[in-house]
Image (tube, rainbow, N blue to C red):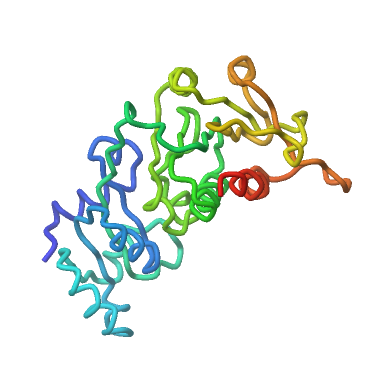
Amino acid sequence: MLTNNEMKYYQSLLQKKKRREENKFIVEGKRIIEEGLQSNNNCEIIFLSSAIVGNSQSIYEELLQTKVRLEILKNQDFEKLSETQHPQGIAAVFNKKNIDQKSFGHSELIIALENVSDPGNAGTILRNCDWFGIKEVIIGENCVELYNPKVLRASMGSIFHLEISEVNNLILTLRELKQKGYSILCADMKGKNIFEFQLDKKSIIIFSNEADGPSLEIQNLIDDKITIPRIGKAESLNVASASAVLLAELTKRYH
């Protein structure tokens, strides 16, 4: 049985500051939890609401097989661990993966996010990266937090399949990777046509805030800009949508 102190502790993980201090985060939903468990990520505890156990005994029996600590909570207690209006009744606490930044940079194509503040966009970009087989992703210091519940939901479990490094200084990180032989490209409205662009062997593609575009620091660092040519009259593409088109084109050149 969960003690009052434990309940307060796990509830505190809804706060960004506490997640960073404890190197843990809460996820909600059966599908994303299954992804985490199947990917051998370290799961500390799983919570089920009494309602979901009453409606689906099979979920309870299935989770018992994982050997992870399992706690059944009253519905009102479960809601204290949830940020959604209509929780599914299943949540879990995972430990963050420790990524050694010194060993980062073993993939031919790396994705970096600069100042992407919308959690839905960030999570969808991670999901796109996973779909197209990208392994390494860099999250800049001005981006939305990786373990924000909305980012986790939008990623649909892809966060567990990627090596993601949240860095304190994106520019410095990119410079270090550039010294390892990476060319650095930035998605930008004024870039070169991606369908005609000659890609280097090792590349980093930066996706920036769609309203502001790449920062001046990024523009001074990159080797080139790339874009998706516009045929119609739309003013721009959502950054997550643009990432799907660009990754579809770029990754086929590595396979």
